[in-house]
Length: 616
Ligand code: G6P
Image (cartoon, rainbow, N blue to C red; front, side, top):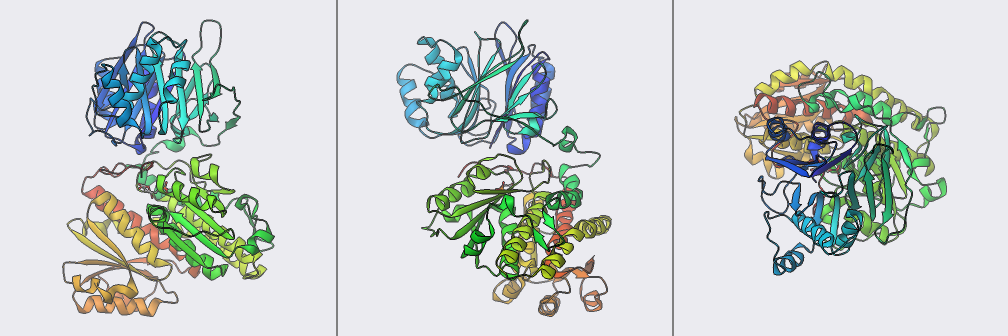
């Protein structure tokens, strides 16, 4: 978690850094800070709370200078406070850090014994003191001082460091947390992800773990430079990649919140994720990115999907497709649970890691374990070159564009798209689907953007229903088969942003517990399209009504029986069964959004959450 930005150029650094941090606020938002070198020394401004507080502090105390670093924090070591906000300063050194220093207790003790006084509770301040000590002990440059200091540190980090004596230099390093360089005309930047740098350049260099880089801003004669070495001092070249995201993709574009914009971007995200990957003529999927040739695809004995949060729900839908369409046994596990029990992997497993950020600690740890056991790994991620795709044998990127709202929406449906593609590919290679079946499934997928546009046209009606849920303290979501994970996702969305207690349940399990909760005060959202399990779910609706529960139903247009039972109905278009989860989730995203928005919550940055969870 936490976001970092560094800028070295010819323009005033502070506003550029604050602007970059705004794009990274999804990574944490309990405090923020910026340090700028004004040619004479380093000035630091920090503020508790969201970035707005830092913007206001910087407006009151303008920082001059064209080189600086900044940080937005999600507290791990030390509570959210101004003292614990980054940058941390020691002597002439200022540091921002994303990650965790694991041996911080021992290092802190050692530094205190030497007479160092700490002014925060953070592990990051240790790095500042180590670099300061290395400089005082004669290190030739900040670059060398940072290298020497990092050799003493264990853990995961991305850092950016300034030295008051080197007004053109930022030293940055990456080990386990992401760090990208942006190469502009007369400026050079670094940041936790590309969205923070896009306003300046589309030419990015993705650092590798163990890279140490010296960024030099443009001088009177020379342009900006980046010198990259390994921790052992071996020079390395990293390729510059041109990114096709545009800066406006990370703007709100007229919507009140990013989440609402991202819900509306789902048709595009799905279409982009399908683009160029399907072969309608042969009813097949181009499998190159999946990293499995037909022989290997046939040799797979089991698919094992690992994910957390919303991605876990996408994985659960994926399991239905993999079993129904590819006829391959599929297990789905939470990343955190894989590391908490002796999970067994085989060499003929296909492990699919689903993670929009590509960084989630628990998913990453589980993927490492699976890979060590010899399994093939396929990453489904929205972030190019992030940690999980880097480890994988194949990468199927979702092309949702930057997702800023902490509660994931368009990444979810883009993940569904990717998992459907994998299912059809495996189904075709393994002989479970013939060309006609493959073609009709893919045609269904191509129709999804149109269906979602139709559903989005009814957003105002969902807003009306949301009004009736604003005071609800508990909401139950029920679904069956493909729609059970959608019930889980609908409940997760509601609790994440509206802070109401919500629970998703398999409709078939209702009578094994949740039915005890039902009375006239409990809203029950039932996902009941006309599919193979429709009549069973209709039975649940009748049971809820018999106990005076309030039913909000998602039902297929023309469903008379539902019409008589439910208090509110969100109508779904008639669509092929395998695409229903794409459609049923959309009204639930809107419902959560409108309830939270009506309650006046900060929808894009809900309390206590962060979009990228890089801690265990
Ligand atoms: C956080 C986010 C969720 C996300 C989950 C997994 O909790 O707030 O929106 O679903 O992490 O993230 P991943 O990047 O692995 O999909």
